[in-house]
Length: 184
Image 1 (cartoon, rainbow, N blue to C red):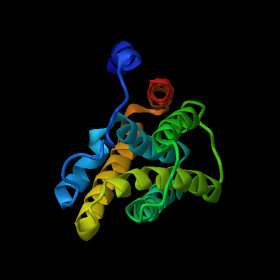
Image 2 (spheres, rainbow, N blue to C red):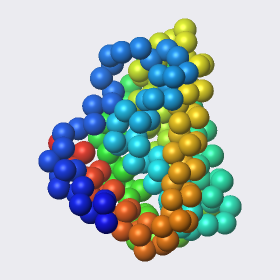
Image 3 (cartoon, rainbow, N blue to C red):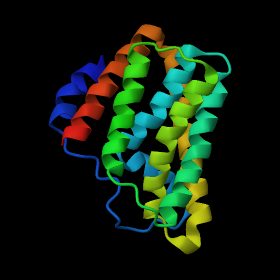
Image 4 (spheres, rainbow, N blue to C red):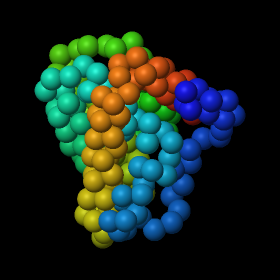
């Protein structure tokens, strides 16, 4: 219910601006904070856990693991300066996609879901890595990996506690929020 009450605020909110290129991004603490700095990252990472929980089975560990592994690879591409045009839009699209997958309770094989989630992870990781200071990437990366794993776990636990209907409604609300992020 609180999510529905906050929907008007989501509709008028500006972009998350988590990737400003400013500030210190060279420590474990800054890496841990990064996924919480943008609503787009926060939603996507929680939604991975929610979707994995809804569909169940090996997905509960395989899909979050695929996201984290791909996010690290994407982080290295961002750190290396490899371009990813439209990364912010792609991150917003990942929120829309994950939200819809949750809302419609889309069940896919473990490997297909892992591949899709890995594609999202690469995009999110690229954004993290592009913000990183080269000499201090390892502690920063450990921080964003820990935060991401925590957010996946919160999504898994939250979906189980809330039940499938509430989780699916939250997925729909997240898809709408992703649309707002993309359009703003």
